[in-house]
Length: 356
Image (tube, rainbow, N blue to C red; front, top):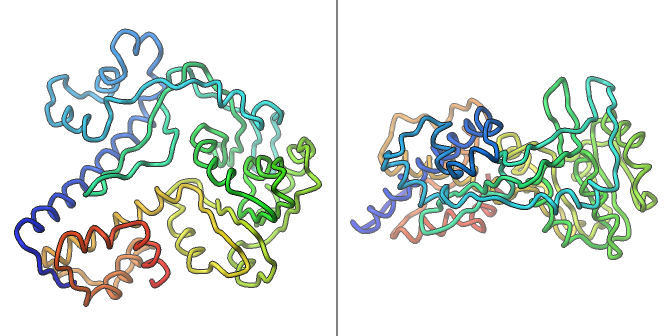
């Protein structure tokens, strides 16, 4: 990378690096909070102290910590508030699909509960501003919400939490005609789109025959439009390589979160073919934010002349991405911060993915 920046642009670039560090710090803080502290919060605590003070108490943050209070405003921690549970309790799948406990092949089909006032992430990440600030979307529900899930060896593998419902809604609304679904899970997405008049058929590609069997035995019989459903036991990527069937819409969801999803997302983006009119990817904003973080790391290294970095060594997928981006962008000139800002846009990231 070749940087020809004036002082103002250099200041903006350093601000980008600073916000990037804050993004990662906030992300880690929320993960710690959700894992260790969220279930300790209840109605009485929030009624007495408010969410922010309850959060700070559980995270051992002093009330006069000015650095944290500044981050609160920038990352909207102070705006986290209560949401109604009713839309999730009244969701068609939640109301109409009855789940009983089933144990088979180390999988357990069961129900789990989010307690009233227990903080949760409930939407895709929000990315905004000149420096790509990432704002996780948290809330707490006014009622307990019980939802279906599949556990694998006591680890939740798939679940119909509010985050899943909210982040799939746009792709449900868009689906039409012949729909291709990558990944079966609990069948929530397939259930919702199969109930649409504008959807004629739903083809599901799923590699795990144990999940298929659980679904066919316990969930599919409850679908009102199960005649619209076809399940293919196949590897998603091999299927796509060999596909010559036209589909109007494809929804891709083979991952649990962005940590395991980025590699699969990149792989599928590079395989998209003309037989499918439109692809949609679950939590794509979060996946692109993860990709953007890797690119910002590379820009930081190259701007600060970290010449000791060996871009041939790889220990995992993230290293592969950074090394590929280094080779792709090594002769790119940046004459302003705006050039860098544009490089980091979603549209540009998707173009980069197709070339790495």
